[in-house]
Length: 211
Image 1 (spheres, rainbow, N blue to C red):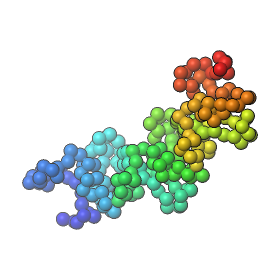
Image 2 (image 1 turned 45 degrees about the horizontal axis):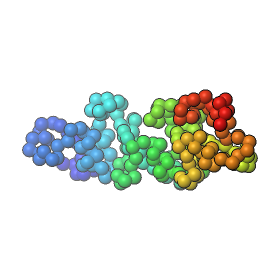
Image 3 (image 1 turned 30 degrees about the horizontal axis):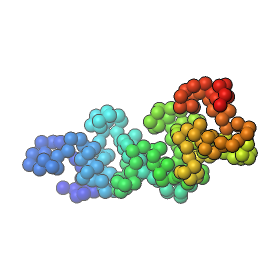
Image 4 (image 1 turned 180 degrees about the horizontal axis):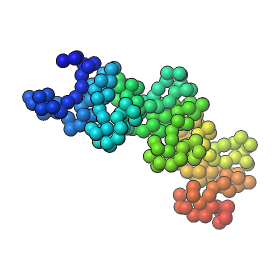
């Protein structure tokens, strides 16, 4: 009655009766995303509340849309970040919507020298629930650092080293990075920095056991 931009989803019998089964959805959220994905007003999404969300969390207007993150470049590429707030998600093509903020950052801002996008991630939004990536480094992304030359080189997953590195030079583990990038290192600097927690086997560090 109010047109597309004023449209919303309802489960009132007066609205449901007579509607073809193919146009009836199990949730209000699904109905909104299927029928009003291009709605610039966000009227449908804004009508959702915590009781009607699968998670039972506060309204989407407060928390953002679950598992829907998009790139926001309002201040340019280097200051860009990812968001799941409905005002950014609504109207974005499906191919540019990501399941996680981390995936969005790595796909959309991989060459970002500032690391702005990655730095906005926090433990609550990481799949692992661990402390922020700025403290721990990026999971399963290790690169060679040769600031002090080959013999003093090592591998790191800190975002300032990883961001901007070609994908072919990023390794799943610190050990793999060391063996690939510093195999001829006479000082053993890279290997000596490995510890049990970061080795796949969880064994004591190589500096204790020997190569």
